Length: 433
Image (cartoon, rainbow, N blue to C red):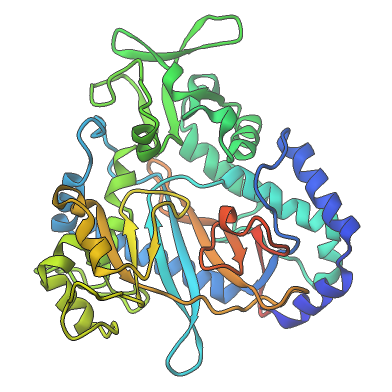
């Protein structure tokens, strides 16, 4: 939304440049990119990205500083997935923001969700570099385009990731663990990370126990002890696919986790009602950037419904069986890539969720993304994600951002695959831009 750079990029854009971008990405990642890459990056004032980064950190600090919240979040971890040896803080965090039009007509950020889980740190750095290379962006900027946050250089960025993922261990004894990684859409990120940090990519189902230790088989079939797991295996995917592990997740093992699995539940969509002030008795101060949300069971019991009304969400004066809640979304608490979200749910749909499962859902005021990115196919919406790394003995550090561009109701790349000038993108900033 730095207009001069937006206009100059549009004038410079060629189909050949986009082809160079895709070819460069495939070469750098060592595999085809299995999702849509946007033709364009976005150009944002540094102050905007820094402001979003501060906001995400502030919200996280509110959660981590509240014992009642942490105890409630701990109880939300499903049986069989409460992993031993939890770290004192999350090693990774993402904060997703929408840009919406406020009541006074100005753009303002709204939190989509927080998630204490790694994102595509490796791929995102490569994507930004390939945008620069494919389109000659440095030449048009009139000053250096910034990719990283917190004043990080490229070397500083990878040093931070090495400290967080590898720590003090031998990279050969550090694994990036995922469910069937070769078939994941995030494989390009895995391969970049493995190449830069020297870690191994393994299927979590292939990890073998030996006594109190865990290990993997190398290319020669030898068992290699794992000292640290960079966890990319999402619990709800493991549950949905009924992944059978060779080791008990809840047992004590002589291994450290980089991104301990419990934090996936502790900082997640579960936090949204707490951060929006609808949880009875909560001491967490509501933040204006968090759209009002309530747990489904509270909504159907009445107190959540009343809390959303008090927060200004347009709802009927009273619930009724025939109501359709046009201003609400129904969201599963623990899902990824927008799976399971229902727009404008009916009261009947909400009531149809079995009572024993309602604790796994929330309802939230719908946000309408403001189209802010000019493209040849019209104005396009942007969702901005801030990626944080938090090494042992260090501080939570905003490291890089990513952007998803879309023109459909859902912003994920899976929901915009048949459109052009949408998809996975990168943000560049210029001081004073």
